[in-house]
Structures are given as C-alpha cells and as structure tokens.
Image (tube, rainbow, N blue to C red):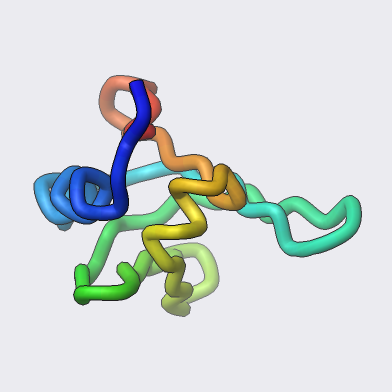
Length: 81
C-alpha cells in the first residue's frame, strides 16, 4: 500500500511516546540501528530520544516515504511503514 506524507505523519503522531527500533541509512554503506522513543512530532519532522546516548535525533517524514529510515514498534515488532 502506498503511503502519502500525510498518512505517514498521522501514523507517527499516533505512536508518539512508543518505543521503537529504527534503521537509518546515512550515506554510502553507513547504517545506524538504534532503539528509542518517539518524542515529538512536528509538521515536517519527528524526533526520537535515544536513551543509551541520552540524545535526540530527528527524521523527516520523507525519509520514511523513501525508505531512508525504517521504523519498527518494539512492543509488536510491526513495521510502521
């Protein structure tokens, strides 16, 4: 099923506060895999708090649409997108 940015934004908003596992492509052969919590949602991006590093990272909804970032719910293992 194809998602629009609006449906992706709504799905992320519904899971605000949930623990997630994400995998982000950061360029040539660089992949970052971490666990975190969806902290905030904004019109163009959302933030994830990384407890192990006590830091926050942000991603755009377009990153999810283009599969640069993949997000899984930690509780069910279900892919959000």
